[in-house]
Structures are given as C-alpha cells and as structure tokens.
Length: 271
Length: 304
Image 1 (tube, chains in turn yellow, green):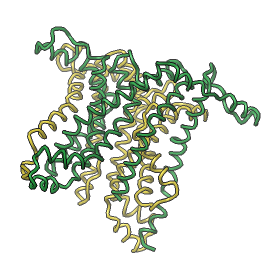
Image 2 (image 1 turned 90 degrees about the vertical axis):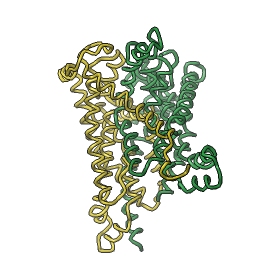
Image 3 (image 1 turned 30 degrees about the vertical axis):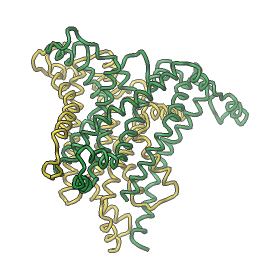
Image 4 (image 1 turned 90 degrees about the horizontal axis):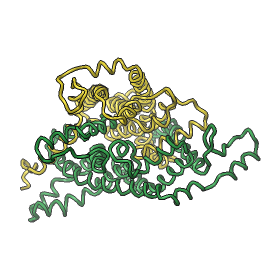
C-alpha cells in the first residue's frame, strides 16, 4: 500500500479531477458564450464577434477600462517598491522597534474585509478633503496589494542563500550596493511576479474602488457590477473574456519569470 | 561585526517607507471610523456632525468632543436588522468554511501525493483562478445559475426536473459562489503543510500495521492541523465581511453584514451608522484576526 509508485489512490485522482473541473468549467463556459451570436443565453446562435464590437463602441465601458488599467499600473508599481522594501526589512532586518506592529499591519489587509478597508480609507480622504478619483483609488489599491507583493518577495528572500550577499560585502561592497548588485537581480523574478499579482488584484477590485472613487471616474469592475445587477448581458461576457485574456498574458509572463529563476538553479518564486 | 549584522541595519531602514504608508493609510483611517461611528448623520458636506476643526479654536474642539455619543451602537443593539445580519454573516462564514475544508482537503491531499514535478503544475492550476477576476468568476455563476441558464438546461434535458429550478437569489447559489471563490485560499495553506510532511512517517505507521484509514486519521490529519487552521482563518475572516457574492447570488430576504454596511453607506447615506457597523464587525473579527496573526508570525519564524 505504501509503495512509492502507487501513492496516488483512485480517490486522490478523482478529487483532483473534480476540483480542477469545478474551478475551470464556469470560466470556460463564460468565454464560449461571449462568442454566441444570439442575444438569448438559451439559444446558441453560432460563433460571432458581435459583442466585442458592441464593447468597443461603448464609450463609458472603454473609459472605465482605461481608468482601471491606469490605476492598476500605477498602484502596482508603488506597491511593488514598498512591498519589496517591507520584505527586505522583515527578512533581513534582525528585529527592530515596532516589528510586531509592522508585520501585523502589513499582513492584516490580506484578510481584512474589503468593506472595512474601503470605508476607513474613504473617511480618511474625506477628512483630508482630498478630491476623490484616480489618486484616491490608486492609494487605496496600493495599500491593499502591498502585502501580496511582500509575501511573494519575502518567501523568495527567505529561500535565498545569504552567503552571496555576505560574500559581496566581504569583497568590499557596502550593504546598499550588495543589495542592488547581488540580491535584487536574484529576486527580480519574484518582484516581477509581485507586480503582476498587484496589477491583477487592482484590476479586479470592486468594493474598495466603489468607496474611494469619485463621481465620473468609475473603474471597470464598478461598471461591470452595475450592469450585472440589471441581469446577464452578452456584452459583459465579451468584456469579461477580454479581461481573462489580459490576465492570462500576465500569468504567462509571471510564470516565465519564475521559471527563469528556477532554471538558474534556485527554487521558483511561489506566485 | 559579521556581514549579516552589517546588512541588518540598512535593511531596517527599508522598513521606513512602507511603515509610514501603512500607518497613514491603514492604521490612521480606523481612528476616523471610530470617531465617525460616534457622530450623528447630518444633511451636510461631509454628511455627519460634529466636524472637528482647528479653525474654531479650543472651545469648538471641546464642543465637538462633547457632541460625540454612542447612540449608533445603541441603535445597532436595539434593531433586529443589525443583530440578525451579524448572526447570519457568522453562520454563513462558518458553514462555508466547513464546506471549503471538506472539498479543499481531498484536493490538497491529492496534490501533495502527486510526483514532485506535477506538484508545481497543480499548484499553478489552483492559483490561476485566484488571479482571474473575482467579480468575473461570480458573474460566470450568474450565467450558469439563471432561470434559462446552462444548469437548468442540462437538468431539463436529462429529465431530472420538469420545470426550471430557481437557483439565483437563493442561499445555495451563494454557497456555490463562496466555495468557488475561496477554494484556492483553503487549498494552498493545506497543500503547503501536507507537502512538508515526511512520507517516512506514514510508511512507518504502515510498517507497524496501521490501516490506510488509521494512518490518515492518526498521523496525517493531526500533523496537518496548522494548515487547517491557516486555511480556515484565511477563508472565515473575509467571508464574514463579504459583500459581492451575497449581493449578486443570494436573495434579498436576509442580508449579510457587509451588505447592510453597504446599504447604510451608499443607499441611506448614513455614514455614522455604517462606521459603527464596521467597528462592531472589527470587534467580532478581532479574535480570529489575532489568531491569524499568530499563525503568520509562527510561520515567519519557522522559515527564517
């Protein structure tokens, strides 16, 4: 029974297959139906790009998509810089004043219900009399996604051989130089993966964006949500498929990056 | 001084920027939530009173302090609507976490028993849906579960039902949505613990005559409990405050607390009540949040 070759029981195979089918079939169905020529979901009217055409003529949707892309790219960049710094501090700084509070604060947004994060940030922005729109959403998303970047980068830093940095310093590098010349290139794939993750999370967020945005600057999820509340529309299927396509590209790049790092004989960054 | 120590000091300086950011945009905002939860709603800009302002000098500040009152919390306690929302959220979160554990564990277990080179691929396959938009995945289910959606078409074609079943706006639809969305959060911590288990332990138990069932319940499962805890908390806490899934998939008869907060804020424009709901929600979640923090920290220490 415990022979190594037959570790995978029939039950194991069944649960894996069913689990993956459960995760992927709904998305697959959505993608297929986005190419349905018929307006009715019940009827298959043949393949068509009609709903994509409709989307590209929908000015409000395009504006919302553009807003989401800008917010995503900006907040992911800031979150990557801050998240990487936080990961370095947590994995290399040996213990500093307020370390407990720091790691607690950093990881809390991972599980904090979005309604609370969204509401609290909005109240801050109102108190500061900040004009709500692109920048407030960007700041909110940076706060949300920084911890995800920190997790990804930190797990890479922890598995990294520290003797490399130490060797660089023995050879006369100061710590900052050692980090930039030795550590940073080694963790670059994880940093890139962190950026990608932050970008897709920002692209996805509805709740926090709804609280922190202002009139006239809706993000794509806000637009999609208000359409979905009115019922299923084929055009939404098309938009969703486009978003899934974009995310698929992002995932391929991120996994290529992590493969690159594992090809160098290091363990792959967990995405 | 060792090189490690030398590296440590500038590494600590690296904490400054993210530290300041998180204090400013994560910690400080809670103070505003607390303050506004003690305010009263007003038809004004901003829509609550009192408004603290340094312009009026000390006397106006102390007046503002005096105007704070716990009235909103009295309202939350006296109105059944709020209490039942909190209760429903906790019940839904507990039920969903149990279902997630039941479904997620066999999958994680199967993944852990795959050959090494397949494990990475299986992990990717579980993570990818997590990257794909949350909202889109819920919408995918609206597509499938609606009146003339795919599920009813299949059931009708197989003659399992004679008339379309109402799926949307029911609790079952909501549970399907929650399980679907949070499954990766449950599988990944479980998988992480299960792969780290020594196969030798199970083999030793088998050599000593334990049946496969005994091996699982006496060796594997107890050793995987840290993963069970991490996965359960990672699901339970956000599900309690969930808004999108119940809003799109469940009926409007009884609301979860995230929906009630949303309603008070966006529909009733009652910011103070919305804030006090958030404060109570935080208090409810404080214990699981602290537990989660401890688990995180222990993992961090182990990996160092």
